[in-house]
Length: 140
Image 1 (spheres, rainbow, N blue to C red):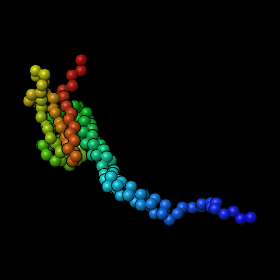
Image 2 (image 1 turned 180 degrees about the vertical axis):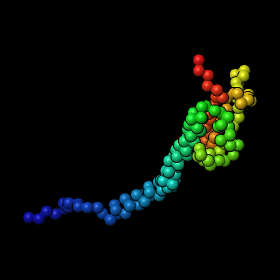
Image 3 (image 1 turned 90 degrees about the horizontal axis):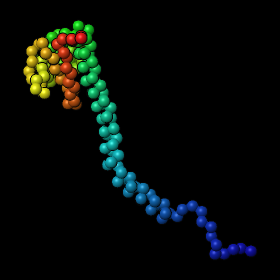
């Protein structure tokens, strides 16, 4: 005997497939602008870290030169150059500040060669790094 009226469904109907594909296309179109920005700028963090690392490396080279030559701040004064962009034995950097300072009344004021040397360098991202080099190391 044959059974009539009972059908077993297998698979999807054409309308279900079309509706599903349409919904997927709409969601993809909504996410595309967000994802394109994310992928386009995904390398920015690595570039910024490399720039910051380079800046730190330049300052470490300056500090190593200072320590290697008996903590001579006058030598550093000459070797870092005048304010501006430099590419020398220390690396590539922009010298922002090169001045002798001393501390008076809770703040810094202009000093002489017998005071601390303040060096501020900047990288191409505009990040600054400042270091003080004492003119003399006093050992108690």
